[in-house]
Image 1 (cartoon, rainbow, N blue to C red):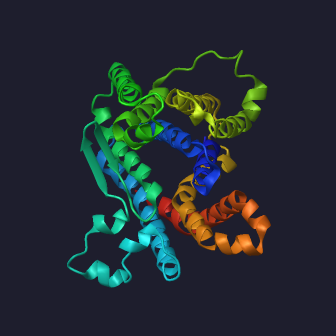
Image 2: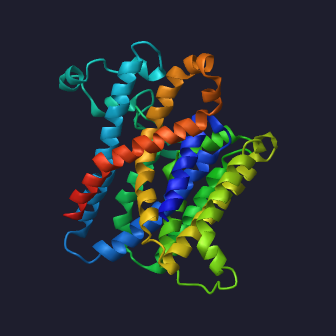
Image 3: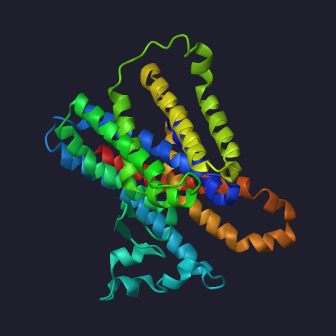
Length: 359
């Protein structure tokens, strides 16, 4: 399912590059689903019933997420520091001009440093919301939702009972539906984005759904999963994602676009579940290319805003000199994001993975 993660990451890049629609929103829920499945599978196969498994799990998760996150933040910091000398972004207003002096000063606060223009942690009571933001790269708030889930999942294994897991899933479904349709008007997508999309409580449904998929037994679907589908299912997944991105461009003109929004979201979830299911029961996860594409998904997510920010600075200049480049804006951003992510993976990520394997 590495290629699925790769395509979902590209949806986020294309969305932030200005394609329109809500492709990036749907992609994150696909990521949450895969994360829930992979982490639950990993604990079952590599951690549970071993000595100090909870400590080792947290340590490996820390090494997987935080070092690349900090390094990507530093790349973004130095890119912004250079750009802010001749261009003005919102982040420039809170950007320390001397990192060493700032960190060594008495007023230094790690939360302030990473908050950028957003609050570092938002916990609101009405309705209940738990959201974190990590500043220089604004989409990093979604990484914090994954961290919340990783902090909770060992607790799930204290009650490693299928009935309890399924019961929790139905509670999560009720919470999601309550937030999406009771607290949001049928045409208020802005409020949906504020209290559902960035909120850990309704998002937990998709993490736990991935965990439940791991517990499911093989279902006889021979009449649906043909040899042709097994051969080209990744292509069908990509076509489905592209279709959803295109269809979501103009659906908000409807009076019921929150309902339509959820339909497209759950369609992407369905496609992702199909990929997980096929990989689970047909041993396709050992494909080397699929593995590399999956490993590139996190660097792509970490680094794409650097490319988009740099493009934003030079876009006006390019539009006057090379009109054709502006027309190719999204492909250019995708190309340089993938290129930067490949470099990042081989210099940073792969070496961190080697350290994790030693633990």
